[in-house]
Length: 272
Image (cartoon, rainbow, N blue to C red; front, top):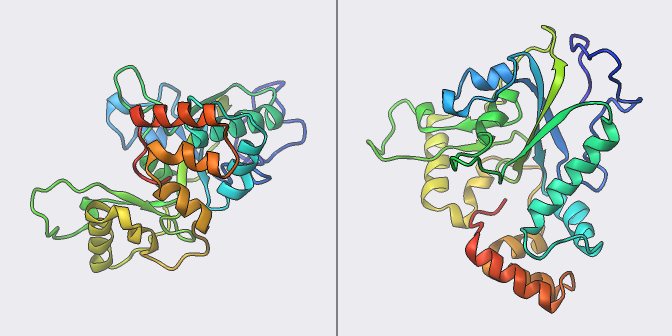
């Protein structure tokens, strides 16, 4: 992320020469898009509003397929993983927290992760909406179909990235509480890479009816996809992933048992 010419920094606030939030070097999140809080609040219900002024700077963080080998496995190798929490959630939190502290030591930054919930059981932020309004990835929904063939059936939407298709994840939202964005930061539309009505119908049907086969991720040609090892991890039932990590040598037997027990209670059924 680079500060735009129109972004106003508070007095005395500097990034000490680190104008980029470097999430690429061995990190879990390696793509970031800027936006105004107001852009997000304009398209979500009042219950999901972010409680900041409309011109506050925010960043939407994405992870690409390479995060598994470049970030997660080294994180597990370092033995920083707590067996009672999801390894990817832990890796994301560690990476983002470390990067923000390094790059923006004088900034007040609120971080919300995709897995966090409010006491009301609402997510802290609507990840796919945030990705869309920031221009990172197009959020395809039933409303994008002129004549939906499903009648009144509820159809969940899904984001598609112009280079990665569905092989990515939205990991976090960073809000720079003391940075107001100038008018030179203009909202950009996300690339509409699933253009035809037929392809959009196919995308939503793959995602809603056959999400387990991951075919929706390949609705467009992609530059990257998950490695065989990453696919094995996500295709493994959440309750068995601790055992798999144990087989790979990343968790002890005791940690594996705790991880498996935790995942039975807090499953992550959709690959990230």
